Length: 251
Ligand code: PGA
Image 1 (cartoon, rainbow, N blue to C red):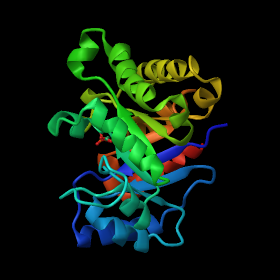
Image 2 (image 1 turned 90 degrees about the vertical axis):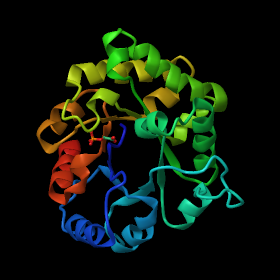
Image 3 (image 1 turned 180 degrees about the vertical axis):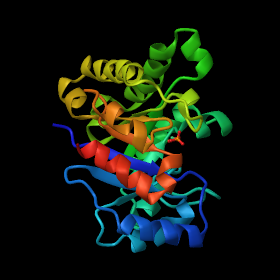
């Protein structure tokens, strides 16, 4: 059985004061057993969140890491080793906002994925199609190419210690959610792609759904056989809403 994971991606939101408030709310949550839970604040607030959540069963992750695993001369970047040293356990790799707005290439993402793993972090590889790609009937092809590029560079074995997040770009922050059936189709295809190389890896890997997940639609998404939790953006900025989504993964 795969243990569900619910991760809250705070994106570029927060101030020290609002982060403190969110930590207070998270500390008060009744959390479901059997669900792994994480929050992913801006790097600047990682230490505040790690300290603030001490003793609470919520892990912390980062939204990005450098292509080089270790500290060194790379102005403006943060090494995976530094994230690990600060208490992170996860790092997002290839979020669509970074692919699209910052032009992160597939080659760069494989290096980040490898850097994260070299430092003991769990990469959460984000993949997903745009609306134009979906409308052109290219969804599965796009997702296969994004996943395939990391498999090709690092081997399928890299996914024994990684998480995949399927996030249709058209559903991110738009209020439009993939239907459970639409999401399941893509999740099943991701797992099938991994299975062609390793049945064990395919069976064990957690595939999260992300894109306008809220308490009201989480349970039906998480009920699908290949959806193993969620990557939650906007709704993770509200502790009670996030808690309700976490509980939906436990039922
Ligand atoms: P959203 O974002 O839940 O606000 O749509 C999800 C994500 O980008 O990870």
